[in-house]
Length: 563
Image (cartoon, rainbow, N blue to C red; front, top):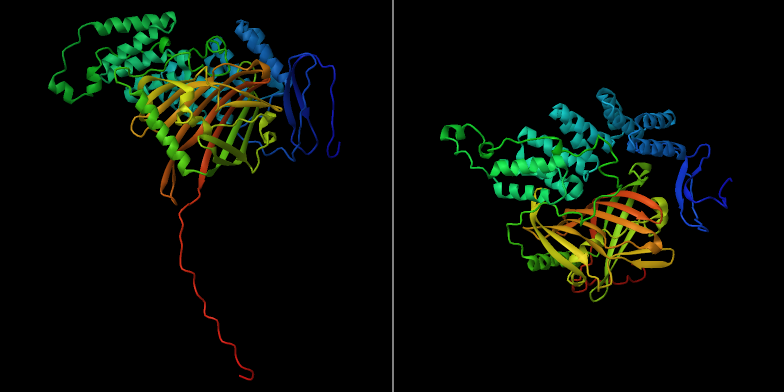
């Protein structure tokens, strides 16, 4: 086929397939398709592009279907503790995919399970240095922490968070590093973020958080955090550690240090009657088996647990929701449209959460907000001047980031039930933690899915962190109230980070989405995407009238003939 053509495959058994197009002088093009029901058909439009050098240096080539099968077989063997069988499958994949980060990561995990830590570090460092592979960086951080090399542990874990800021395992491990170093405020920040992102899966971070809070003198909240851990079905080690700390901290405290001692030591350390303890109970069990602790490829649901908050502070829910709504009204009144540069990182995942396809794309992104009729808004998103789904990987568009904050708009807030969970931190700011959920009796007006010509409205629930000072929404996390079996919509988890964007020409600062992470299980696609926005430009309509007196122009007199 020299320009375009069509190939049809009939009578294919049900299952997962990869379509690959290879043309000399062009980049190999791949797409995945899932056939789950008899008689089902799919249309795939594939375009080959010249050359193959456009791939991001930090993005490995997609694994072939054969390599994916070997890794999957190896993972199943690893899950069953059949280590030699797992090694066989991983090494077969390594022959055709040498230095691939997912393969090196799994070989590194296998080496830790057999006790060969030097080989493990070699495999993991290879994946980390070549591709900034987040799983490998996180695993290295735990190895170095266990060995007592806090400097290397901190370097690798901070690199993991730089590549993927919502990696709760890296946050949990960094909290442990900070606790060992005596940096208690840093330990609190990382532990709280780990629990916000990982929820019950990160529950061991409550031990680190409790120790760090106690070290800063916040004894009451430290005890609260330990009691919350005991209600979360902790492991035996976690429960034992929590009860030991609770028992020790109920005993009478030692008398305060003398003035001489206090003047020569940190007061936080002096207040820490029980020295910080750091054991396996504080840490995520990553390296023992990557499948046992977290078999899901998507994050924990917002209702799995409540991230830690200070419940001793009175929470004025009605006032918080009203003031957040006022900030949304200010946003809408100031914006007609804005543009930005969008950097999209896409991964197609397998059932174990490993990427079988990775892609990075940049778009010219434009958002237009229009009030169609009083109280009803239309938010349109354009990428590279159009609205077609074809420019998205897998032809699956992820839209609606800007509209999520409309949960608090006065015209939409009545569709949701709100609950204040307490006061906490988001980044370095104090924030109210607010849970929201679509009311069963109200139709969803903010979220819908389209498959072909059919539209399906879906309810959402989630959690928002709202600044206690400015009432601006700092972050929102959401899940579906329920899936939609008709279109095979099983999961949608979204996490949006907001930040201040100054516009000098109008002397205006708006809080806009800075980054969004989306996990989606839709119509046979398992997708993880991160969208980063930068280079904002604001457009607006100035309704002021400037009326000036028309300028008069003198008409020169005509010259007489001969002059």
